[in-house]
Length: 299
Image (cartoon, rainbow, N blue to C red; front, side, top):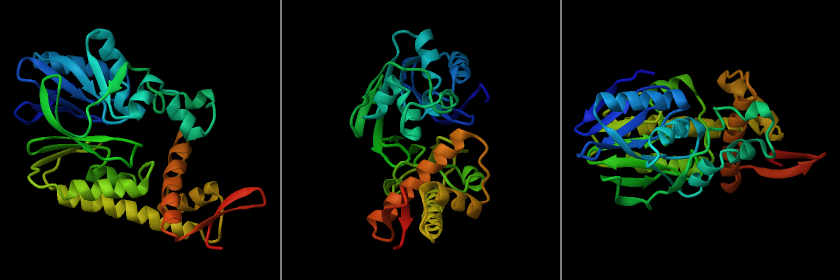
């Protein structure tokens, strides 16, 4: 990951990487950090980039609790003991107790192999962020937008004509590389995408993953298309009726995915489960117990 802040608008910068880090100036030499990357190395690069701009971090806003978005918190907190950390409801609890993420993915106490930095960042002293709407955090005026779906709760950030979509939207290059994205609630994710796509006056969009773009409507359209394609693939994979793991296997075959790590299986399994729930609620499939298996399909 580069260590140079790229300026998107006056007082608005980002540190590019596998996970983008947003930096918002308060106009008095301070900065609000939005998401902190995967690990301590990300945290160190944030500190170096801020020093090059003569900025002091005043607070961190984590848009959601996935480990790759708050893994740099612990390093920043160790270097700046007075820094405050904010996150949406429920997400702030996971920041304080990171074991909750591999627990909900695995469904029980996770084996050691799943307690890694991709699923479990170091604990962070988080508190509740302000409710959605116009607010001020660490002297920075912004608007928080509720964009649940990818996570149980997530905030996007708007500052004037700039939008940080977090993981409610993925950059075009990410969509091309990954035909299926993680989500906790596919219906809510689609609603969040549609809401963001309808925003007016946005000139620059930065996602949590991917390059900035000026075409919000097109980016939203592509994200919605990806989500709908996944829903259709999951529905097709329910014929004949099968368990979640068999449906996951069929969906991976459809998209040409080859999972190598246990974490990949859990993340994709959760995504498939989210689309199964949506299909159940739409009345397009049913769920039953058959021969001690939980199956989904049309019976």
